[in-house]
Length: 291
Image 1 (cartoon, helix red, strand yellow):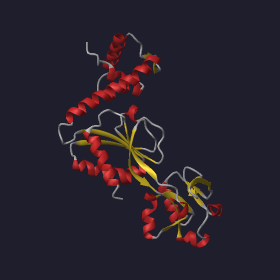
Image 2 (cartoon, helix red, strand yellow):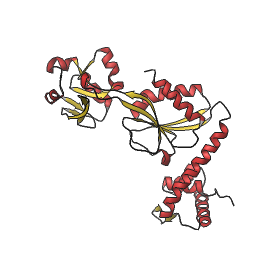
Image 3 (cartoon, helix red, strand yellow):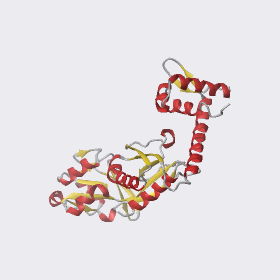
Image 4 (spheres, one colour):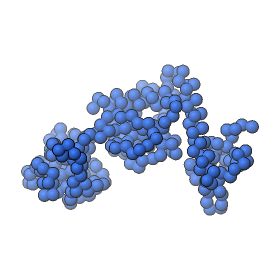
């Protein structure tokens, strides 16, 4: 009996939360999915799923088996990729994710350039500001910005990002430039997701609470407000660089600029890194180091 029968189906059901979702993912019928999962349970002599007319859930044994089943899938993927590595021209599909703005402006141009070099590689790109679970959702690579959380994922630093406080001349001429962190309390600050701005003073990291007339979760929106003279803004350099070069904005508090943060490529800790992924990592590192 084939020991692999039912594993792909079970993982798909657990990942999608339904037999119908698994059937769509694997391009087969619900009956086929149900039959193969049942065969797997009978072979293991363990119930992996609890099923009702309204709800489907993993049993405790199912939770344990799911983790190992995913590792089995990754192992098979690694073995397949190892065979394909004999062909110097990489092939296959890469599933990537990145933050929306950074992905649009920086990651996608690099990925498109990579695909022109390796036309046999297909890419599925998901741009989202949510941190997705790479293993659970089947991603090969994620681009993350800033400080990394503790993770079992492998990480490669591609480049860094600088964070700057800037204002338009129309604002600075009216309210003056701040020269100390204490002076920020006298200024209108344009706020993003956090009311605390990060700085370094006398070699130590500091967070300063700021206030102002606008709060917006869009970096582009804050940039436009700053260019119109509504207040000071703290943004990563890739938002403000063009406006600084054109003279629309001026950086202030340069002596208190926070430490540069990493831009990271994260990927699952597999024993074998597919040729296409390895080449993409090298390509992204070289591409970002040009800036």
